[in-house]
Image 1: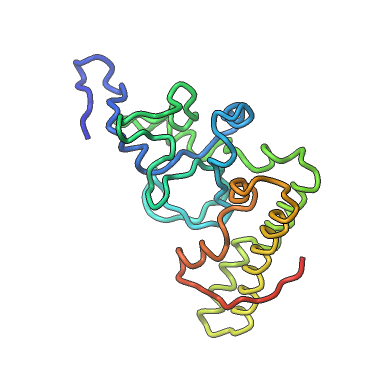
Image 2: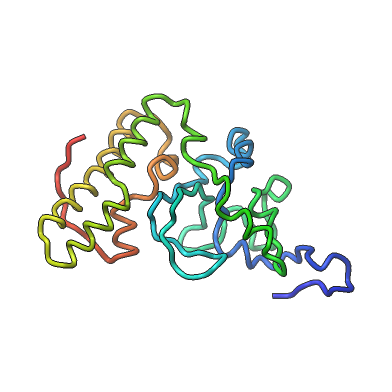
Length: 220
């Protein structure tokens, strides 16, 4: 990575090295709501990291369980690079309308982004709060598929509790059933499912914990 020198203009001026953009898309904050409502950042470009999900903390390092939900810009397939990053030109495709977290990022001084990192994060309620039954379905899904409950079941499963394995399978089946119902009703576009309900639970548990519970039926 290269930086501007202290005597060469603004020492914090972006030199378009692309390092921050290759570490993943930004999380959105309440001030970014305009970007979504005006579809500068389309809903299909977003997904939700749900409360209690295991994530990598790019500010402090390491893996942590998030205590808030995070509406986040997607990365390129099979990559951590933000989907709005143009690697051919080392430039942001929406630079003039980039999210607040990107505006706060300065390579040599992370004070601003550290200060705002966990404050005023955008939530699904900000986006779907007026959507009536759909927001109710999001809330019901969050209650039934809460990660805090999944963590308890994972620990019990490790200890050999077969009922925990069954309950975990039922939770995964519920998560999938909700998505199937929304698809059948065509309530939202396919690309919005991960924004509304987070990444598929089966995918997260397999990727983060190596768990692939057997299929189970689940009522809604």
